[in-house]
Length: 127
Image (tube, rainbow, N blue to C red):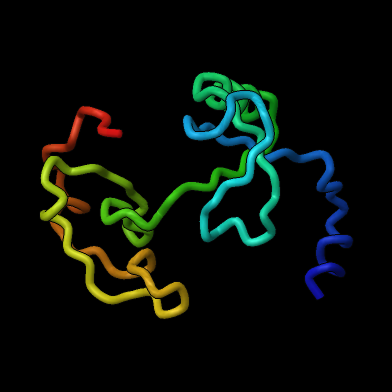
């Protein structure tokens, strides 16, 4: 069972924390991420982006493991190609197929030369 496996690897899950950096949650406090992937509705600690990045860098420099979760439902993410990009024209990326389990196109194939050759990317953050 999953519980048997979890107990066999000897990890104490209380030794791990979930960090996030969102502007729509109070800074430096616990929050729940209202996203479909948060199945157990566990808490994360909302910290500033600079603190999140320095925590990750320090953990890696100290030989610790970091698990990074990210939104992969955007058209510019291609799991198969191992790349995420934001082209200046999102219409250059076509999506074919759907993820039948989650009823979205997160698992669909991306078809575009944008994943094979460099192209013009968006350079400004639009919120």
